[in-house]
Length: 193
Image (cartoon, rainbow, N blue to C red; front, side, top):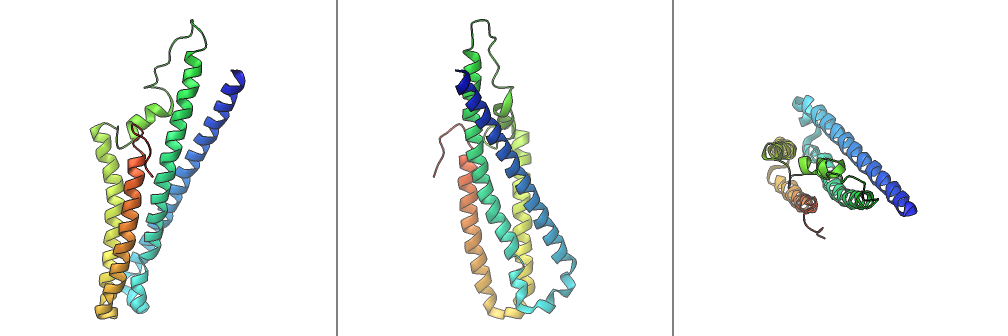
């Protein structure tokens, strides 16, 4: 029993560290994206020097959005793993003896934080904040993309349809990936593929 508890504890700590790293990477890439966005907007009046290349400026942000869609799936896998390990750890503590007081699982550990910060289980006000955060990023990215395509339109004439359709296809794939990640974050159900 002690060996099992030790192994579960090590796995739990490892998963928590990996989850923390995922959040750090996510925040760092968002910082880079914001810096890129501000940097290109700062030179908005000089963008015509790039000619048709203006249409390529949104691509790094599309790549960041795609990377974040992968990170949300990683976060879902990590959350499920951590919740499973946490349940096993708490089960072993609850079973440690008749004198042992049961732990309120709703206020301890990742389970408590998941219930407050997960879109599927958070209180309404928190859900609103989550939707504003993700929706705000989506609006900024799409707005930037439209602005850059509009700026590139007079350089490309009718050919602006080519990058517009390309970006629409990429955003569709990213949207589907984000949706799958959001569904996987619902720990009340089983994971989807």
